Amino acid sequence: MTDLMPLLGYDYIEFYVGNARQAAHYYRTAYGFDVVAYAGPEHGVRDRCSYVLQQGNIRFVMTAGLLPDSEIVRHAALHGDGVKDVAFAVPDAEEAFRVAVERGAEPYLEPWVEEDEHGKIVKSAIKAYGETIHTFVDRTNYSGVFMPGYKPTQHQVPAQPAGLTLVDHVVCNVDLGDMDKWANYYADIMGFTQLHHFNDEQISTEFTALMSKVLWDGTGRIKMPINEPAEGKKKSQIEEYLDYYQTAGVQHMALATDDIVETVRHMRQAGVRFLTTPRTYYDELRDRLDWSTIDANLDQLAELGILVDQDDEGYLLQIFTKSVQDRPTVFYEIIERHGSRGFGIGNFQALFEAIERDQEARGNL
Image: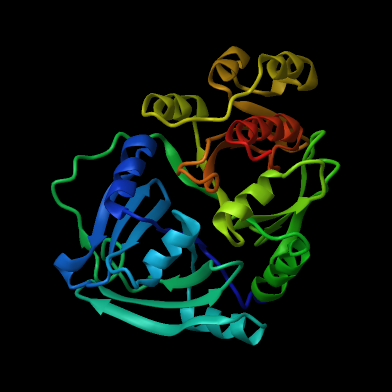
């Protein structure tokens, strides 16, 4: 069948933040992103400042509003620093918009064209969960640094890259009872199918639980797990997120690397804080996995707190940061895949317990 909604991958992820300059500096220093472009008052943009950061095939945009009545300022005040736009690269932004709206998506911005001396970009956007949007970006006929209105940054010292290569998946948290609604949304609008389904028996501890469905485009370019809270004795991590973010939204992004040991060493030295894993996890790991097929040093992984999981397709290595802002909302996963298309189900217990330890320290468990 002809794919009427072809997605080429994640084009960029845009954050609405309180201070874009400081956010850009943090991601440059701690995560190794280069600041490659800027748009602001110096370039005729009167209501915002935006910094474009890039590492490998990952592109982040940090945007802050400049006026108190700005929608960007309101968003940052209500939600804290968070993801506004998960943008997809497409071959035809007008057609993607037409198909999405025809299938039931709510429009956010009609297709429009932006041009400068480097060519033109066509964009359109639809609404998603909470206040998040998806922008469709066709940059086939554009050769500039990012988009019209953005200029290459000058006098920026190149970052020390952490070895991050691409966005592996983007995870959203939704309210209780909304997981199936949004799974059906991505199936109906984007043509996604279900890759995995995890229930509250698989993702739980004595105190809390969640449920999750993983939707994907069928190629692996786009993977979008959708989490909702499940009933438990105490407040789950999903409920804590929703309390502080005030709506459904992006919980974490998984960033891929080809060498997770070196990436995590780099990020730790730069001040990134990761969730901790007890030594008993690694003692059990020696017997749980087939180490003859895993090219990794268990002692190194234990030293850095990196988790390992294995399935019939291969294995993966992963680790999760603590929240990257004051509110316990957005965090990151660093992942290295070797065949496995999974999400570390064997690590869910250890991960959940680590998150609960942080919740308890905040008084939110």
